[in-house]
Length: 59
Image 1 (tube, one colour):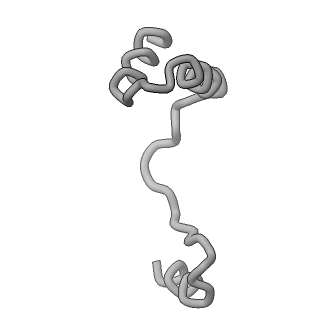
Image 2 (tube, one colour):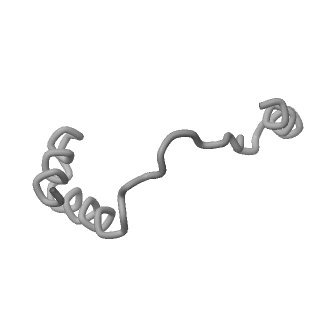
């Protein structure tokens, strides 16, 4: 982490490059397209409704 801190100290307006941890994302292009269409159709959905729609469509 020391290298990342030094990078930030040089230019605090640049985004910090922090290594990612955990598993890679599992959303594919078809999921992204589905989400864009769903939110365009129903912009008032909350995250729990969106998750329900994803699970019912892709599982």
